[in-house]
Length: 483
Ligand SMILES: Cc1cc2nc3c(=O)[nH]c(=O)nc-3n(C[C@H](O)[C@H](O)[C@H](O)COP(=O)(O)OP(=O)(O)OC[C@H]3O[C@@H](n4cnc5c(N)ncnc54)[C@H](O)[C@@H]3O)c2cc1C
Image (cartoon, rainbow, N blue to C red):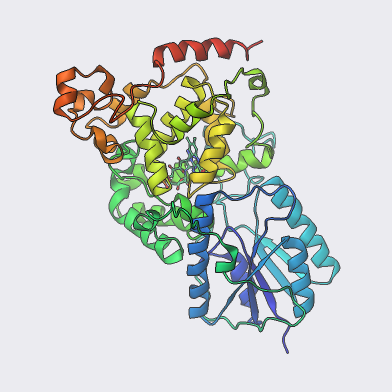
């Protein structure tokens, strides 16, 4: 009997443009498609609650997609390197293929796994399924990694374009689960879904996890929304962005697929060239975050700029933190963002910046506290994008917004949500306020509030702090980092 091949699925839960699956299935050998829920390997960050919800549904979709072409998804639970080695031994596998991950603990685990498999005579191969360019492929003329986005992306774009996406395999032959292999578990046994309470009940109305859902989202975006992307991507009310981030995070859409879909559309309609370049540059930000994570593995725990280590954060007040988490700060754009996160598992990029800035600068809370909350609550919680986003906002990151540039949440709201439609959607108690006051209810005359049915401090909170005083306090604290 032909020795089986093993394909290990991780952050690449799709069939098309999945180079590990393509390599494993190329020989025609019977295939073991494996997902390991690894909560044991030291150093791996525990998944957040929202990510677990997405993972459950993405694995459900992958399992039926594989079954449709003759394959089968097997799930085991435990430390991945040892389990994969044990399975390869029990199956007499000829090869194991996987797509690379870029966190330090993940790299260490995969390196060890590769060495062990090689020692057992198994052909262990890793592939790039998650990025347009490997983090080490883009470097300065001197051969150094980049710390600033613009030259990074310019250099990346001067390279040959990323290869065109691979087609999915047409047919697979599932190998039987070998005797003596680690025990399999069902998806339900992983207990990835929340139960009491089911806080994710509303997510399904907004998302379709899995490859078919990702493909549909990508094609709708390039067909309908790309045209307004460059002009409207900063306006949270318009829905002009791709909403592909959880798909990219879990690999139900690969970055090469997104990149080439955008290129292809712009080639057929040249007026879209500017919008397509902007979208590709946002994919470039994702690449840059991975480039940073690769050169700075502690991205989620340590300040990229060490001078921020002396920042006098005020982390002690759990009530204030809860006020921010629940979207009850009294600043409508911040509250709308935090409630969007709560009810849909995502938040528009512009509002992420505003809400994060409010926590870090107005409330003077360490960016790591906010990063943790996003890690737990975002469906797209990403090991590179999330800490890089927070460090960018805090001013401690590479290529960060200067610390002294402090967003005024009221003016940001008025600029990017000029009609107040986004606030009205997520903070319905303000829905009847006229647009002149929807971002500043505390400034509205009593008669205007009464006519809109808003009792400040009862229906909607008064501002939890005074932005101007908070700004001065933040600038004062910043001085502590300059010595
Ligand atoms: C504080 C903070 C935390 C963030 N945390 C995450 C996170 O955990 N996961 C995550 O995917 N993104 C994160 N981002 C980046 C960004 O907000 C989201 O990628 C974006 O809102 C996703 O919406 P979209 O798919 O419609 O984006 P689009 O505008 O359609 O962009 C397309 C894709 O490009 C990538 N992208 C876009 N903007 C950025 C960016 N600024 N940095 C890195 N990649 C980007 C994403 O993969 C996105 O799906 C964070 C930003 C901030 C300011």
